[in-house]
Length: 279
Image 1 (cartoon, rainbow, N blue to C red):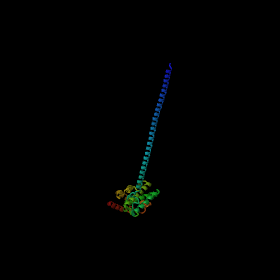
Image 2: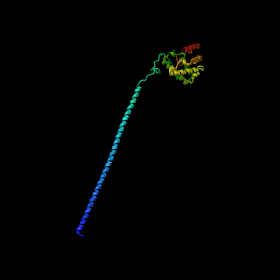
Image 3: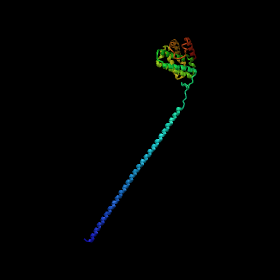
Image 4: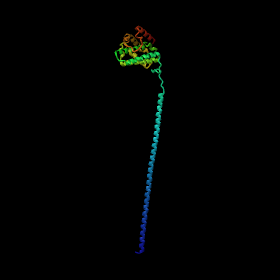
């Protein structure tokens, strides 16, 4: 082969080799650039995700702060509401209430001298009944006490020189209240005691007790005539039986002036007829 041909072939091979080298370098650079682009895109995506999460965290923190602020406002409003309610209660408690003129409170009711005479005597009697031991003497005294109260309320008897009709309306209400308490106190110590006073008058005394209790709750429910003609007469007819208790027992009521026990039956019957005709 000629020398010129070999040189041409060798030059072609070298040229081809150089071309391949250049081609591989170009491809490597493109791959590197592609990878760099992908990496950049990945970094951007990650940054976007991180930024988004940071934004969410910031938003959550902002919401938490807003919720805390709202809770604080609610708590403040609740505190103000509670304070307002407490203030209203205090103002309500400070407002004086009107006292009923018929109340048994001595600070709001002005009793007459006659009222106080009877009220004080009956209060002393109530205290004696409550503090006494249950003996045979007490039983007689207790029965005599109730008989004397019935005499005072229904037969114009007197306590400390005062009759029931001479009391004020407030005094009558208070006296009926104390009389009912005395009856209850005796009943607690001697259950059914009115039935043992006398067979002739047990019904009459139970009726009297009923009227006293009604009058203690409402004065308008009490009236002497409500005892009834039969009960009035039965107590008058049993006068001699009832006198036993006044003679043989210590009367718990101080100064009792009995219309029933100090009058003859004929006089009592005349009194009752006049009372019935006037009512």
